[in-house]
Image (tube, rainbow, N blue to C red; front, top):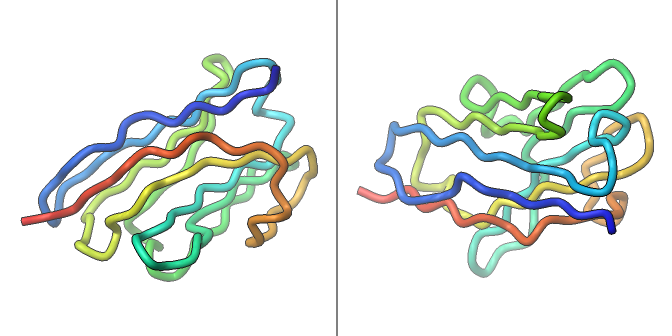
Length: 124
């Protein structure tokens, strides 16, 4: 059974940092393009960052550039999202998603597998 499990969410003050993890089971994440999405209350789910399965090129939405970093650890079958300089508007449920294709596309329906989400709350 192919499964994605996110972890690492929590509450943090503005300017703080968190590292989210997306662990795969039942398949090797290094062969999949992985996207991180987030959904704030009352808003649509939006793409935040993507790392492709080809050359691991990364793509970031403008609002997180310079603050968020995505990386792979193939030995642990895990993709990480390092979030720094967090802002109030980063508060959301964060999801990782996977697709067995080699390029990134910022469309939720493009991805076949989804984790359950992890809550990130930025509050003073």
